[in-house]
Length: 425
Ligand SMILES: Nc1nc2c(c(=O)[nH]1)N[C@H]1C(S)=C(S)[C@@H](COP(=O)(O)O)O[C@H]1N2
Ligand SMILES: [Mo]
Image 1: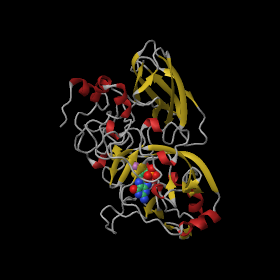
Image 2 (image 1 turned 120 degrees about the vertical axis):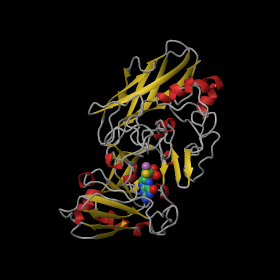
Image 3 (image 1 turned 90 degrees about the horizontal axis):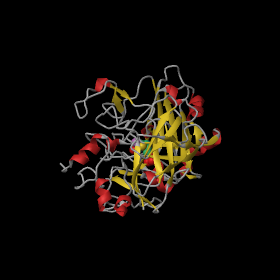
Image 4 (image 1 turned 135 degrees about the horizontal axis):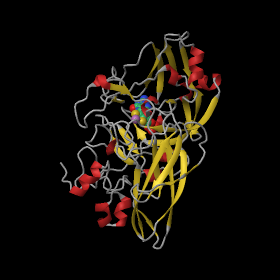
């Protein structure tokens, strides 16, 4: 166990990871020990409370062609990397900065992407076998800018620590996805009245290489499956969908956990009941219906499937550890906010730990499921150390909490307010 000071404990009770003196076994990153804060100086770094992971200093670096080396590597087998909040400052997340989440190994790159095959079967009138070329020929393509967010985003802020990849707020990206509507393909297959749930299968082998096991196989109720925004995607930001992100063909199911957005998708089976594949059972992608004691023993029958992701706002500029010139009396902020199936009603910012809040200005999203970019300006009455906080409220009036709530063993739904530390002068 890492020796923690009283102050650090106070921070932890506030849902914030204090600086680690010893790197934790599970995570190879020294949370808060990254580039930004280090630049401010040791004194600030040891007292900083800001909730972010600015870099991968002292950790193995992600070295994958086409990907930014500043992504924070959370694991290499399977390959998992997140995008520190300050790297999410683009309106559209570039492919190089987009987070990566694999559960298994990567499939082989197909010699001819256009002949990639998708099967639609199960509770349908007509079983379909479509190549990527067929999909492009038979169905109209559309492009939507949409958030893809890992179900475990925010997990690292749970106390006690929850099981799984220790995402800060960077298991998220917002890209321009081009593809055909899943709803159109399901319509072409003809849904039987018995079709109530989907099951998604892909080409990525299980980590153990065991061919009888799926690395992941999730599904969704038919009402969500037939939403016109779900796409069978073959292009990302105007480029052929990269292999790493599921190319040549993946699902993108916005608003719900990223695990529904199956990469290298080969088969979608319509079922007459809830799916029971890899990632559907136990406490996977499930949250307590009845709040449980943090760290306690889970009773799986009290759990429900996590559907729409909770509201979240992040500060994308300045980054944690940002420095302003001496004498600066205002700081311009930029950020992003999103809210699963809902929209964001408002974003607010504070420089006094939430004693007072002022509104941010939201830009109009391009389409439903796009994130809301926001800007704000805050005044800083003197030089010195400040923490900037942001919080968003969704269109149903739910605001981000101060601390992650509804603790669960695998740490889903943690959406505490985001904060960064800056130094003026
Ligand atoms: N075939 C397959 N699809 C998958 C996964 C996977 O492991 N295998 N991971 C899922 C999870 S948990 C997430 S969060 C997203 C991540 O997509 P990305 O790697 O393109 O960012 O892909 C989803 N689709
Ligand atoms: Mo995920």
